[in-house]
Length: 252
Image 1 (cartoon, one colour):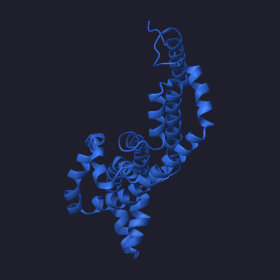
Image 2 (cartoon, one colour):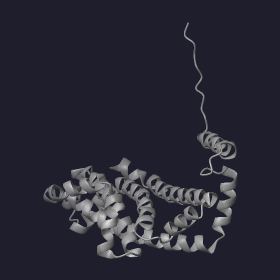
Image 3 (tube, helix red, strand yellow):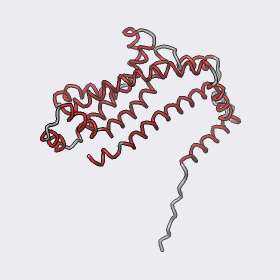
Image 4 (cartoon, helix red, strand yellow):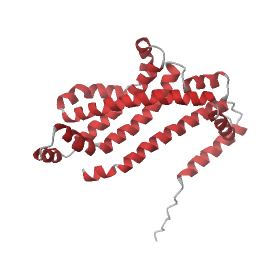
């Protein structure tokens, strides 16, 4: 006689609560100075948010992140569209795009300093390099999935080249483009933090260096969690856009 098993659904928040409890116990009784109790980290996070240094670092980091990601979008989407439409462009650029998306870009970042100097320009370039390749690849993938009959129909109705590229190709590939944007945001956050730490101690990089140098581990982990939270909010904003435009994939 077969026994029926009821599926036990565990809420997603249970995992966070469990790991938070483990962290708290290790911090209080583990004797590890590098891992303070989670409750003290939350208190430090509230205190950190109120600091002028944190707000200044947030504004500086947000500025270079927005510029770098904006450049990645402006360059990545058109390049991806061209690679999806023209075989010669795909043959010329596919190799380089795949090299850069798979390469350890962190090791490449210090090479930017002799070219761009030590400052925000180098951090912007770091964000751009981390983000642009995944946007290019996902945009190209979206263009390649567009039904060719849609393009032929648009031409038969006298659509201009601009109308074909915008109203047909771009909108039909929008789900993949937004996926690339989401991945670009994730990689861009990595790029801005790595750039600020390696290239120039600016923004959050300066705060990380200050807290580690002074062994203020509560503030250090609080800053880590705050950055994770900001990145999560940015990614979820793009996810909402993806859900809003899901119908384009169905229509396509």
